Length: 48
Image (cartoon, rainbow, N blue to C red; front, side, top):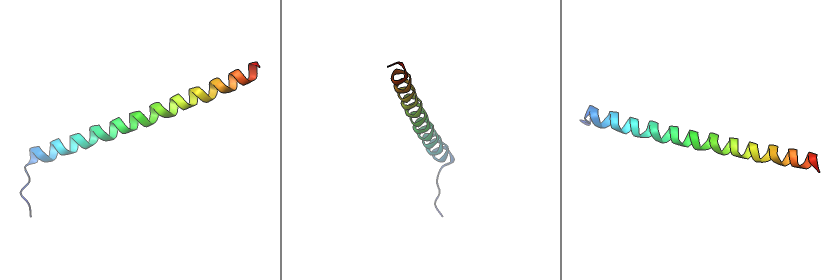
C-alpha cells in the first residue's frame, strides 16, 4: 500500500470538484446561450 498524506488527498479531491463544477457551469451557460439564440431566431422569424 502507498502512504499518501490525507492533506494531499483532500486537495486533489477539491481540485477535481472545482474542475467538475466549472465544466458544469460552462455546459449550462452554453445551453442557455444557444437557447436564447434559438428563441431570438423564432421571434425574428415570426415578426417578418
